[in-house]
Image 1 (cartoon, rainbow, N blue to C red):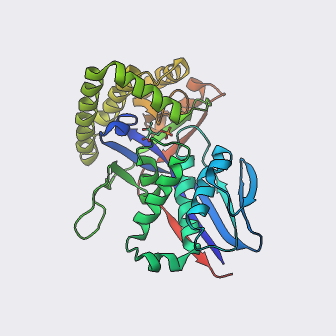
Image 2: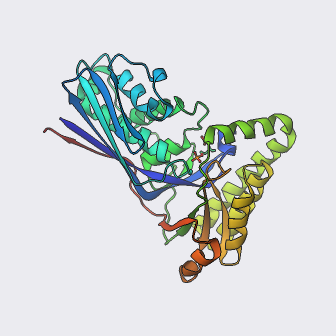
Length: 330
Ligand code: PMV
């Protein structure tokens, strides 16, 4: 039997870092995905194949014994070890760039959790799990915590639900997601990669230090971010791109103040200012990507402004699927 699941990468439109400290954030799925295929094998091993290499360890292994990039997958296999007496092979195919804040690790955790979950159908009945997607999301966040203990959970949540969401998510009494933000117009964003890999864990630790040393200002910034997100929600409702762009640039000021920017990112942001309604870092910063609200007719000016050493692409932010699952008997 084969269990296949895929999940999208993501961008954080507003609220990165502050979300770790309890404020709201707005995130969107992007049109780049990870697909994970899981199968049982005859060998008593957990085998993981990915772009980062292959590992094969005995099924009794603990996730703590393997290199960090493989830890979430071994954690997930470990989670089901009571149900599983054969081996497991997990294959990851991804078109999301790694380590630049586009949700590669969260999309891997979500699709791997769903793919492995799909192999153990009886498990759901045994534990009486009604909200299967919720259980997969919780499992994915726990898997991600093996490499990044302080994650807010926002990334895995948007990779699971897709579209554009406000985080933390809320559900109606009937169990319907209430936090999806319907975008009823074409919202195209430019994503530009600084090509500097970053460590989310290190950036988040740095911000926690900033908070420790500047408690009052950090609390003001959290309040400003909350207000900004309310204004963004209104701007999205009113299809008001000018305000949306202004709010992106305002959010960037807060990110500069908590010191997750650097000269390369600042240069990229200032190069795009003239042709954008707004530009900001997306994700942890200190490298990774920026996003810009650039009109279609200005898109062809971007490569010359950014230089050839940067990767950039346009992302349509609308109605993108989250987690997709499939189970094949053979
Ligand atoms: O890993 P990134 O670059 O997508 O950043 C994650 C976003 C943070 O807000 C910095 C951390 C978090 O867990 O929300």
